[in-house]
Image 1: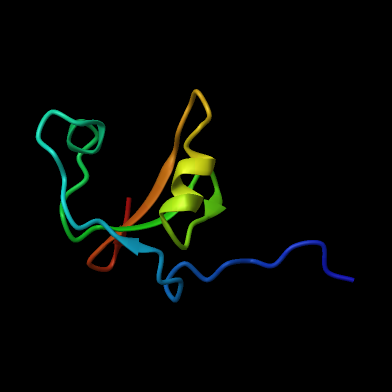
Image 2: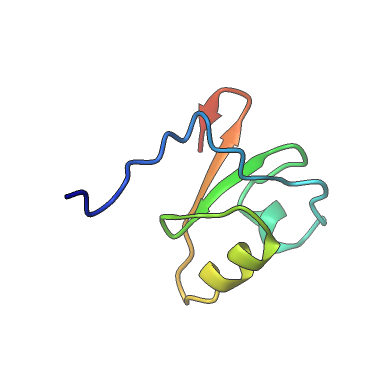
Length: 71
C-alpha cells in the first residue's frame, strides 16, 4: 500500500509565470517572467486556482524551476 507518491519535479509542468509586476510580492522575492511555479507550501500546483488555494496560508513557500535550477 502506498500512502503518497513522490513527485518528479523535473517532469511536472507547473505553471509558467508570464508577468511580474514591479513592486509586487513576486518581484520582491525574486521571481521573473518565465519561471515555472511547481509547488506552493509543498503542494503541487497545476493552475491559478491551486496557487490561490495553497497560498492562503500566512507563511508561503514556493518551489520554482528556472531553466534547469530549482529555487
